Length: 372
Image (cartoon, rainbow, N blue to C red; front, side):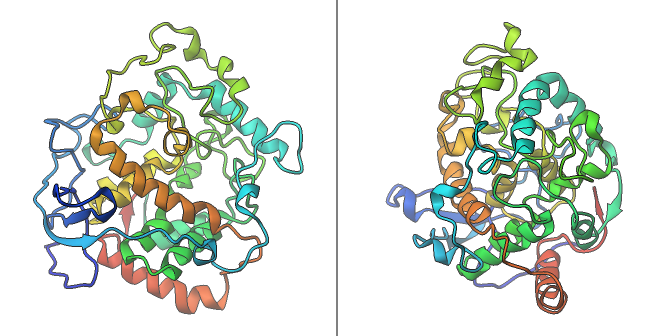
């Protein structure tokens, strides 16, 4: 029986209802039922097309109670960073083909490959390969076991950090913890990139070679764009690579809306396949009690054309604007906690960090062996 009574300072989230008297900045959020299921907005009657079909996944239960206040965003970046850093805000996310000191050649190559190979057909093939429908999974392991599989994984798409991905996860979580945000948000920081574990079952041919920092990783990390419609030149890094995408020669996909309907909603869009989508599906399949906001941060944090550049507004629903605010808040921690000098391995990891986060994993239904 997974039902738990939890009396805490902070509660979980499933669906928000904003009273008319409250502003967007003072929104409240609600506690989900004890049997968490994939979230479906109340305006929908079926699971969006970007998820497995309704025969593969149960419908959502959106009964909610208990309110908490939306976390605030620190305005001082020193409150976000896990320790002091000499990098300025402008020095993060620098992308140029001309200066390899600012953008390593491996990053340029990564985005060229990503633009060439991320198509509707590829998305659908990966969705099938990594399906959790009908009890499917690839391996049973704990979150902690998955952490250490990622210990030597270095993200080929990241111009800001050459440390193993495990340390980036800890830096993000500890930055959120340092800013005194709720524990579910801390755990989201720890989990957000764990979908890169797909490298265990992938290879360079499908862009999932995580064994080398120079491996082909164009379906593991990097900024994601919506496949099945025109790639927005003004919103993506290296827009000169857009013409390399085969779907941009297909009249079904190369228009403003492509295969989508106006204001169809964020959950109906298929973002380039990567760790975000996989980890979202993994958490849903394992019935985590993490709130919807956490699942949104995990699923959409790499969608920089959307949450940073403002693309795809013509396909958003009204509720998606509030969801975007949470992702934008989270991304400040994802980005500004990156620190080459911050070493979190060794005694501190084993004696302080891992015991603390084990407790959060248990609390949010992610203890023990999970389906991957």
